[in-house]
Length: 123
Image (cartoon, rainbow, N blue to C red; front, top):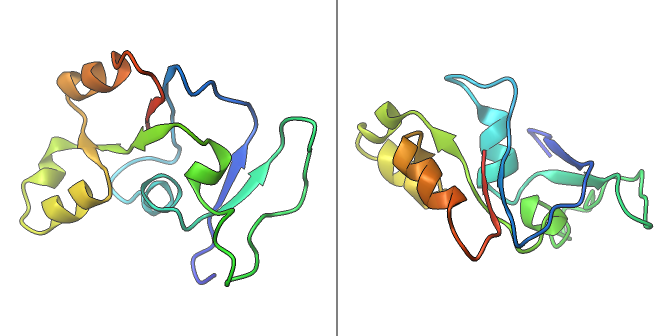
């Protein structure tokens, strides 16, 4: 992996509830957040449950089934939140939308966190 990113699971999340997740460092250049939450390319490590595993999953480049957010938190749909100004630039807007990003407006948070079916996470 050229740009290694490791997503670590420290708690089980109920897929019927909605969540707000934080990411640090945040700011203008959030490459780690994009890799961990907007793609399925990051390596994963689970520190929960009876199957406590200290090994990093999916080190084999040919096996991508255990990689990414969805492998650690099945049933939870995540949305990476960013500044509304990022959606003004042509082509950047389309790229961010294709990755599932949303603007950081009050409406976006309410829409995602008030979803009755649950299983939403805003980062």
